[in-house]
Length: 174
View (cartoon, rainbow, N blue to C red):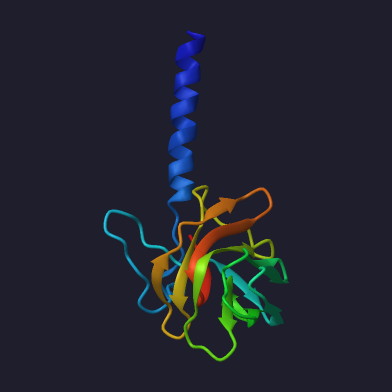
């Protein structure tokens, strides 16, 4: 009898979690041209409004190094760049949790080896979903999500970590 009650409670909890996790934000919150992946639910940047822009610049040599501001970090291993290169990490004033990472004098930058990027989303209100968040390479001008970066969502410390071989703007999505 006790196992039957446990099973009923488990099913009820699962059903409740699915209902709560499936809630979506209103259509007015969807950025233009959000990407819809076939076979999955649409991803939307998580709301995380701030009026403060944070930015830092550092020169990284072929020996590697770290550039960090506001909990967002890019860690370059030795050999990721062939010559000293100046990088800028910006966490812009935005309605979303987005960052922009760039190399001086280039529109697009490719690394010789993958680098690790960590984005701190602790300033954001707690996401509604229990499922892991995702991080995307995105076009902040159009709101188009271009590539899922396959990051790791550490909900305990509220960070997303991923590797990349190119620089651009990134946004955390649900």
